[in-house]
Every structure is written in C-alpha cells, then in structure tokens.
Amino acid sequence: MDLYQRIYERLREDSQLQSLTATYDGGTAVFYQRPAPQSDSRWESPIQYPRIDYILDMTENPERNTSGMLSINVWCDAQVGAEPEDIENRIRALLHAAFAQTDDTIYCFAWMRSDAFEVKQKDEETVRTIGVTVIFDVMECPTLSLLYPDP
Image (cartoon, helix red, strand yellow):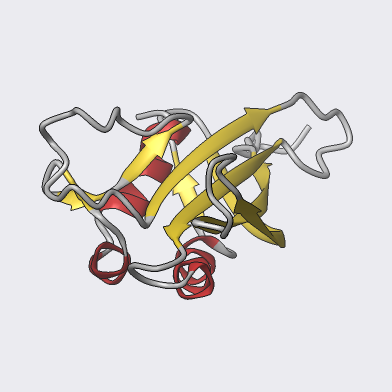
C-alpha cells in the first residue's frame, strides 16, 4: 500500500474526525487534492462542510532532513459545523510523530505549522468559507541492513 492510501485511511477511519466533518460515502469527507463534486450522490447531506483535502509532495533529499511535505486543508462553513481549529487539533493528534509503513518504506510525520485562511465569495459581503492548512514534514526512515559477520 502506498503512502497516499495510508494517509487517506488514517484520516477517514478516525471516529472523532468523522464526528467533526461532513459524511461522504459513509465516512469522513477526506479527499486527495480535490473534493467530490457537489452533485455526487455519495454526499450524505446537502451541507458538504467541514471537509478535508490533502496533497503529498515528495522530494529527493540526499541530506535526509525531510522526504516531503504533507499539506492538509480543512474547509469549514463559517455558519455551520465544527470550527477549523477543532479539526486541526484532531489531525495533529493523529499524525504528529506517527509512523506509516508502505510496502517498501517507513515514514514519520512531524507537524511544522498551521495557517488559517478565509475565502470570500465575490457576490457575498461576508466570509462564508474559513479553514486552516496543516503542514507536516514527511521523513523517510530507510531500512537498515547489517552484514554478519561485520567486515
């Protein structure tokens, strides 16, 4: 299983996170890069907030400080549902200092920062969509091999 899927499962299967977000296809509304369209029948309510999307950006780093960055966006309706900070705290509890094992590598996540945002629709006078972007460093933990006897 790849790292994208491990992150998805960790976020989607958490019952506390599910209680804070909209429901999509029977679970937490979590999406890789883009949310499902509003017309998708798997939304269980016409209110599709709060919801979560994430992006995983992996890089090659010879110094092995980090192997990539995980950005998780929490989107909330300013008038309905949980606050972005409540969801952010749960995401941090789920992922900070957590390990994820893929088929060939183990990764660890370290919370780096959180940035609040708001989106104002051009036809509206008030802010309707608020949120927070939670950013984690992704560190690869390569498998170590030992030779016996040591040469």
